[in-house]
Length: 394
Ligand code: RFL
Image (cartoon, rainbow, N blue to C red; front, side, top):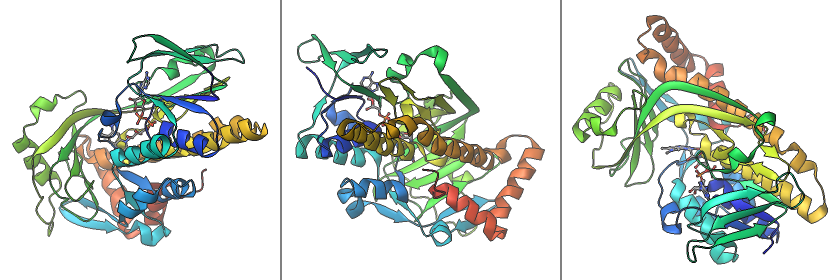
């Protein structure tokens, strides 16, 4: 069997890419290691930037999202026992959409497979890439139903298999640079079966460590607590979690937290990487496979969509009209936004974690940086632009 593009991975990047190709009648096959039920339930991100939603909308992929997502226009920092609101939409004219990643993935699978009859194979094992240095690449995998090895010949391979995928390893080591950064910090990622405790995202900047509150839906709320990297979630009883959240998110006039059962407790080590370039011959990486940003600035899913838009349009131009310019520029255009967001994550990490660093000098400069956001409209606007990704880096 032969197809134009094999897409490895059915996350936001792979599914968006698949939909763009299907809409342009480009043949493709999506290979996904997990089951459909699993990927439609996997909780992760929830914050989408307005440009990303407009990109989905232009491609007919945002109907449910626009009907159901919540629009957020401001965020709140709590530090030194006080609440400080930052009205980012007022400052930039743009806002955030809050739409849980599993809902977006569900919409994208339905559109690709059920509406457009796209080919997607779930539960595949042992995906391997072949012939990347030739004009005739192919991808092989173990088929879950028959246990047999299958081979799909293609023109292009899109590596959309996330941070733990296999396609990144197929880039030739001597031509690729991987830039890494480890913050040396852990976050306990929590999902509470409880309504949000505020109408906006809340960042608690506290000497005991960072705490975050992010609405996901009227019934579920994400919280984060800074912890040592590699910490065991077993060290965090529900009582300890809520006590720590109350302390770190506490501020004068702050409404009490709405508590509930904790349905997810995972420790995430905060680290980033950027692969340069993210292409080799017919292989193009997109999303977390090519670059990871710790959830510090809620950028990962947005970058995955950005890559899918660029790569989808470039592949359609190449396969439809023989125009190779988009593929030639893909890595550079992706990386411009990636590095911009990496820099913002770096900046924001210091705000989140500086006061708890144990270093009084860093604590002092962190608080100065924070206060400036609420005394200088220029500083607030600069923050808002980066927080919303409105700086035109695409
Ligand atoms: P994904 O979503 O990881 O999808 C990759 C897919 O590839 C499959 N796969 C394979 N398939 C076949 N063969 C193999 N060998 C395979 N190996 C893997 C996987 O099963 C999966 O289905 O990558 P993609 O598409 O690049 O999307 C990236 C985003 O998922 C990620 O950046 C975000 O979730 C990051 N992130 C956040 N991003 C935001 O923009 N805003 C947020 O608020 C936000 N919060 C978060 C996050 C990530 C988190 N975790 C757990 C990593 C919060 C958390 C807790």
